[in-house]
Every structure is written in structure tokens, then in C-alpha cells.
Amino acid sequence: MITTTNPATGETIAEYETLDQNGIDRKLETATRTYRDWRTTSLDQRTKVLAKLGDLYEANQEELARLAVTEMGKPITQARAEVGKCANLLHHFAENGPPMLESRFWELSDGGKAEGRWLPLGPVLAVMPWNFPYWQVIRFLAPTILAGNVGLLKHASIVQGVAKRMEELVLDAGGPEGLFQNLCVSSDPINDVIADPRVVAATLTGSEGAGSAVAAQAGKYLKKVVLELGGSDPFIVMPSADMDQAVKDAVTARIQNNGQSCICGKRTIVHADIYDDFADRFVAALKDVKLGDPMDDDTELGPLSSEGQRDTVLDQVAKAKDEGCTLVFGGEKIDRPGAWMTAGLLTDVPLASETGTDEIFGPVGQLYRAKDIDEATTIANAIPYGLGSAVWTTDETEQEHFANKIEAGMTTFNAVNGSKIEAPFGGIKRSGHGRELSEFGLHEFMNLKTLVHPA
Image (cartoon, rainbow, N blue to C red; front, side):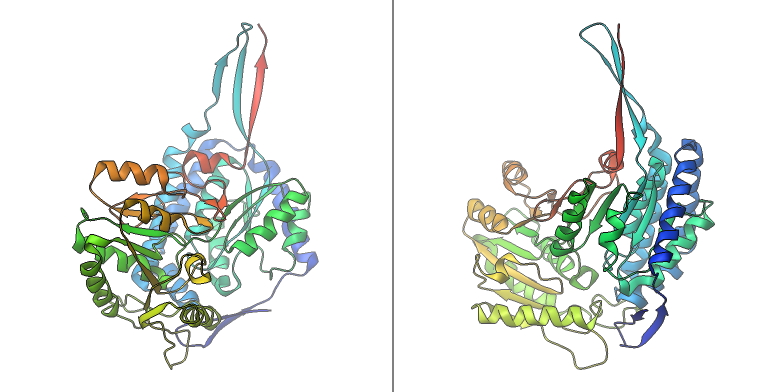
């Protein structure tokens, strides 16, 4: 049995019966049977399901948003935006996806011709987290449907209501039974699911530990994986930056999704020439963040996803102080039911410390002073992760420097870093491998089959 809890109140929401081995086997058999038919459907049929599903996310935006808030605590305005982004992605693949599947042709040196044709692979398992409970799944599901594959979801336990509703919406959009199924299970059976020959590949968004475990099992059975893991993204501010906007966005980066976002700036690195001014403004703005009921449109910071997650962050703050970091303010438990804590800020963080190299998945930021562009780059890269990054500079030479030297899968200039539906997304180093979104994400779980016609 899986029990979901409202992190804003600590109250139980619902209980969900977990699948036993027979239940899992039935899901896998349904997926296999559905794939045999779905892979033969036309692109027109697939895009109609995607477009209808996008319409349903738009029509049910408020209901879906409130469900996410109830289960994992993000502010309602951000939940609405997440659902809207899902609708946009579904429509994007419905409208722009078919050309991404067009064959490639080559003239061969012997006078023959070759064709590269994109073909589906089969049932793909997605292991997904709670922090963006719709978006993380849809950016897997949209290309899965378009490619002619079918999807199996092992969602985070705390968002089983979201998972169940997402499965229903695919059916409501005209998708056949088995096109997308939620596996209501704990983590225990996942190794067996990956090992099952009916599952051809796996994708995971989550922690480094979970990614390592899934990759190891997939590797054992020679199955492809795409991994989007943790990140401790740099947010670099140089002297040419628009200071007002940079401060505002630095705060957004640290408290977005209650500080529980892999790709928003966790380590704010500021050039020495503007450090003092920026620090004063940044601290004042962080202290002014409105904490409150996540269902309130004015709330900027709600509870963390669970009391366990909140306590993990509090333990990291305590560890930081033991390592010699300065807690400028906040980072404290709030004495009320639920998973509440205040935003906080750390300075004087040693680069080689656990605090300097680990990810803090909560509303506690880190502030660094960099004497020049080279030290800013060194601080940015002094972590085992390489997911996203943001750089504030209007100097084109500096932009080119950071574009080439920051070790990350993505760098955003003069804005909060975030995934874009038209562009590839993913990380390097211990932030994972492979790409999602765009044609690169679509092709990850497809067979580029080469057809050769001799002269």
C-alpha cells in the first residue's frame, strides 16, 4: 500500500494498492500487445492522440495543478505553468514531430544509395520524480507516443494521484489501453522490470544513486538508458549584468518549486567588483520572499515535498555550519504541521567540502565571490555535476568564454535556466547522459535502421 500525504498539512490524502508480481506481469503483457499494433499506426493517428492530449491538459489545467499542489506542495501558480508547459510540448510534437522522423538518404561511393529510417523499439520504462510530476513524464511520453513506442511509468510514491490521472488522460485522448500505464509499485520490483525482455529501454530523472542503480541494471541486460540526474547549477553574475533583474532571477532560481529544481541556480557566483552590492540586494530579496499556503496565488515559497525531504535539507545546513560555512540567515524548520522550512543562504563555502560539491535540494542558496572571470569559471566547474548553468553578462567575449568553458549540458544567458521544448536537454558528468526534448530526445529510443541499395 502506498499512502500519499499533503506536505502543507501533514494530513493523509489517499491510499493506493500496489501491484503484486501478477499485476506487474499483466501490465507488461498489455504493453507488449499494444506495441505490436501501435508501431504500425500512421503518424496522423499518433499526432491526433498527442493533440487531443494537449487539449485535455489545457482544459483540465486547474484540476491538475491543484492535484500536484496537494501531493507535493509547489505553489499553485507554478503548478498551473507546469501543466500549461505540458500542453505546449504535446502540441509541439503533434505539429512539428513528423518531419523529425523523415528518412535520411546518402549517395554511396560505389554508386549505390542508403536510407536511414527511424523505427520504434518497444515498451520503454520511465522512472520519474515528484518535483515536476507532470512535466518530467510528458517530456518522456510525448516522443514515446510519436515514435510508435509505448510507455510504462514508475512514478514517485508521493504523487500517485498525479500518475493515475495522467494514465486516465491518455485513454481519454483516444490512446489504446496499454499505450501508457502507471506501475503503482515501490522501488523494489524495478530491477526485475528492467530485466524483463519485454522492456527494451529505460529512462530516469532523479537522484544520482537511483540513476546509478538503473544504469547498472540496464547495462547488465544491454538496454539503453537516458539519465537526467542531480545538479548544483552555477548562477554567475558579471559586472555588465542588469543588477535588478539578476537579483530578481537569482531569487527565483533558488526558491522556484520550493527550491526543488535540478536546473535552477543553487550556487550564486558574483564578480568581486559588484559582489557587495549584489549580496546586500540578494539577501534582502530572499528575506522578503512570501512563504505561505501553496494554494494561494501570492505564495512564492510553500512546503517541501515531504517532512523527510525537509529534514534532509536541515541536516545539510547543519553539516555546512560544521564545515565552516556561514549561515547568513534562515534555513530553519518552521514549527507547524507539514514539511515547512524558511529560505536561507550560506557563504564562505569551501569548494572541496560536501556543501560545496553536493546538491542542496531545497530553498537554501550558496553565495560565492569571484575575483575575475577565470575564478568564476573554476568555482562553477568545481562540482561533480554538469546539468545546467546561467550566466549574467552582456559582454559577448565573456559569453563566448562561458559557452565553451562551463562544464554543463546547458548554459542560459541573462535569464533563469530552464528546459525549452524546442531544444535538447540533458547533462554531463554525474548529472547523467542522453538528451530529452527536440529531435534528439525523440531519437533516443528509436532504431535508426540503415537500408542499403547497391548500384
